[in-house]
Image (tube, rainbow, N blue to C red; front, side, top):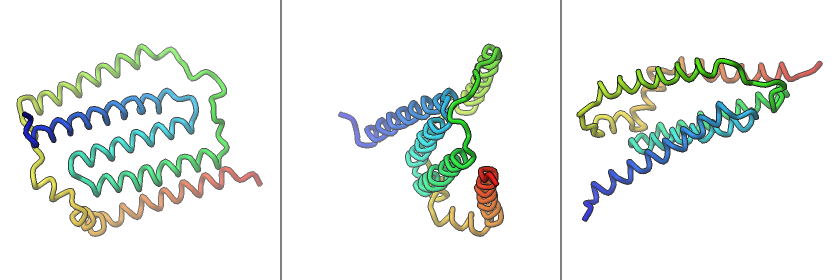
Length: 175
């Protein structure tokens, strides 16, 4: 018989692998899509998967911030920018070039380096979610960090996003 703790760990691993697979397929869809709107929608799936991963590590506040800020604001800003600038939905010419082999070699090299770093850092170590990490991920801790320590960068980013939206409207106007 499987103990409840072991069953929860198995369920968490299954959820992680399902989310990771969906995110990987959607990330490939972002890069491979020839329609800009479809690429933005694939990006929504990737960002929603990241929010699901935050939930798996007991950071619910960060997960909801991910949903509200990235999915709710950034992707909508992308779509508004696409619509307001009247960008072509499909590319006019071929987006293919002769650098596929070089890109594949560099990608495999980076994958190998990152894998070696992870294996070196975590090989043989059991990773557990400690109570300290759960306390750091609580909404009160994060809110005091954002609105005390990082208030100015938080406001600067909001002004930058507003400037991007105004810039898209100015570019789209045909006076």
